Amino acid sequence: MIGSDGYRSIVRRYLAPNHPFADYSGYIVWTGKVDESKLPKSDWTQRHFSTPYFDDSRAGMMISAAMSGANGSTKPGEPWIGFSWFDNTHNEMLRELGVLKDGVVQHSLYPEDIPADIFDELSQNSARHWPGLNNRLIQAAMEQNVFIGTLINEYVPDLIANGRVAIIGDAAHTMTPMTGSGFNDALADTVAIMDSLEKYPNSIVEAFTDYQRERLVEVQQDVLSGQEFSRSFGRA
Image (cartoon, rainbow, N blue to C red; front, side, top):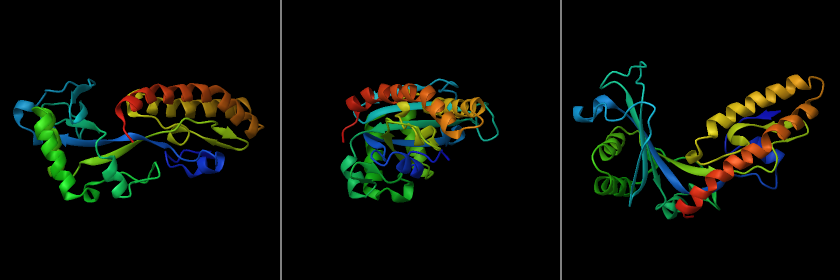
């Protein structure tokens, strides 16, 4: 069995019953994606493609970027502008809502899950602390009901295979997006496990042992590299 069932992996709970859950990193990321056409024309082309824009304020950290629109278009007015707002100030709210229980994340927050007073507070904080385009992105995402809260988890694996069971991707190693490595590591896991299966076609156990030997230390280091940011920014 190969488990690729995400950060709340059921396969991981079987594989590592003494370390089954990812740890909450102490902050939530509010994300959204807005059609550039929904913004004032003066905001069009203000975000270059493949370029992340970082902005710190008392409200947290904001990262925004432009991406191809619905039809793959990059013409002015047609791309999407995405953002991630890193916020470490609402952990008590998350506990009260039951989204965070005993340090374990239960689910993301969709617009219908966010209390009206929290929406109002976030909107006011955005207007107060994010200048210009950043604030307009947030307000537009709220108005269009595409404003989502994702709680950040981290999981440093002790093992990623045992016997005839292996895990890959977020099931094997969950890391803050600040590492920029999560997707690449998931792809590397897939390639490595395929290579190991080809290398040991007559023994799943040997193949999975080889996969763990190839990947475990590297993914441990990648997760740990992001924990320095989480320790400095997150507040559980």
